[in-house]
Amino acid sequence: MDDTKKTISSGGTIVGIEFGSTKIKAILIDNSFTPIASGGYNWENTLADGIWTYSLEEVERGLQGAFYDLKQQVLKNYGIQLKKIKAMGISGMMHGYLVFDQEGELLVPFRTWRNNITGEASEELTNLLNYPIPQRWSIAHLYQAILNGEEHINRISYMTTLAGYVHWKLTGQRVLGVGEASGMFPIDSSKINYKVELIDKFDKLIFGYNTGWQLRDILPEVLNAGEPAGELTAEGAAWLDPAGDLQPGIKLCPPEGDAGTGMVATNSVAVRTGNVSAGTSVFAMIVLEKEFSRVHNEIDLVTTPDGHLVAMAHSNNCTSDFNAWVSLLAESAQLLGANFNTDKLYEKMMNQALEGDSDCGGLLSIGYLSGEHITGFTEGRPLFVRGENSNFTLGNFLRCHLFSAICALKAGVDILVEREGVRVDEIKGHGGFFKTPDVGQKIMAAALGTPVSVLDTAGEGGAWGIALLAAYMLTGNKTETLSQFLYGVFTGSMGKTVNPDPRDVEGFRAYFEKYKKGLTVEKAAVENL
Image 1 (cartoon, one colour):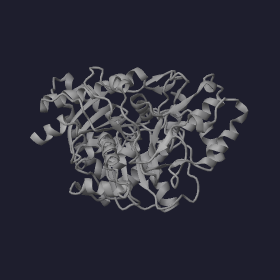
Image 2 (image 1 turned 120 degrees about the horizontal axis):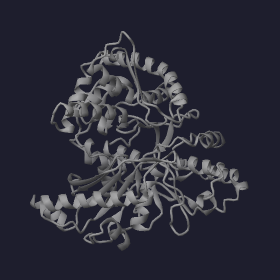
Image 3 (image 1 turned 45 degrees about the vertical axis):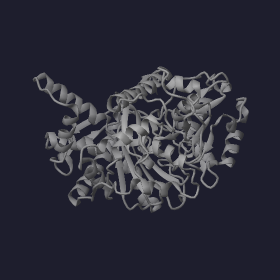
Image 4 (image 1 turned 30 degrees about the vertical axis):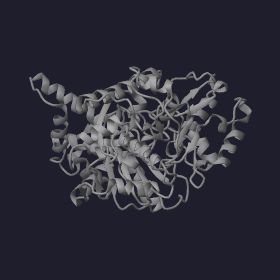
């Protein structure tokens, strides 16, 4: 305790802040990279005029709220007002569309990763660039806005992501880490920069639209892991901490996306390693040994925070529908006067899913709250279906929703394995899906047919991952790769590994076949409801 107090009071700590889809988390780590305090702010996206968005006012409130909560925990636990910090990093949900004019004013509401409204642009750019350009990517949003003839186009001065925006406000620097930048536009891993020849193709494509800018002029500068990315300005300090306690001058690492910080937080940045982040959305990241043989529209190609090529199978929908049903069941229990802890309820429900039949007893859920790129949906309608002879038990009901949460991901991973021969030795899991011991691991191992481990520290998530990237920046040791640095950090922190259970593997296979047939019903629901 005394050592921790000295580290805090002397300004020897590091802060990581991540903007997740449902929570903004701030974490404080010490010299041994151990989390010593955290703060949070809950938020939710809204659907406004058909666009999934967060307001920039809510971004500001959330940032300040999470940091204030962190400060209060430090004060409560250690009796110290947090004023000095040696480094900081910002992470956020990848992709999306944030564009600003010359005065720094937002031109249109933030369009998040959740929007599947750029199908025309995505298809045309993928064909033109011969590179997968998913609908979520910033460049797809930009080109779709051009195709739509939106009036703001010729007023764009800067385009960035959520993490890039917050970093810009804190430091004045218009930069991104290479992993985050790889969700805006294709990256040349050998140069840690955008693919110049593809930028030229894009500029040629839009020449006739008279935008008044070229793409390279509005994109953020790309930085590698370990490079400095500016310092907290006086204005930035006041924006983050309106109370005025925090001192400016803090060094910041390049802002990163949640995919990159998830890879760091699970020690999955080396070739043939992989991780799955599962919560509101779910994505698998596998560091590749070589380029793909051809373009697969369902799969993103992004990079690690130090530029290695990564295959990313991303599903917009994961636990949202399961969470909604658990909330409904909780409300039913409360009508009977039940009083319970929500976390305990989730733990009970997750474990009950293991009591169900291996194939979920004939029940089927398709939990598309929003569109699903991998399976070809621009909108979603959550469905639950059962036959007259199905085994309608609580265990099967919960199990089918957990199975369904990762079926779209399974479809994407199958493309990697079956068409490109991608191999991974082990998957490391993190996110809310794995919070209950063993349950999420067993289901994910059954779906992917691969051992799944959850690190002891995985619950700290991307906020811890970006804090580690800030720590790596401080080493200044360019001879130590990010992978080597993380090896030292994670020594002794390996958690339990769960191997695929043959019974569960066969049950998931049978369920997945039913799920694929059920997509016809989902299509009809989208068209008619």
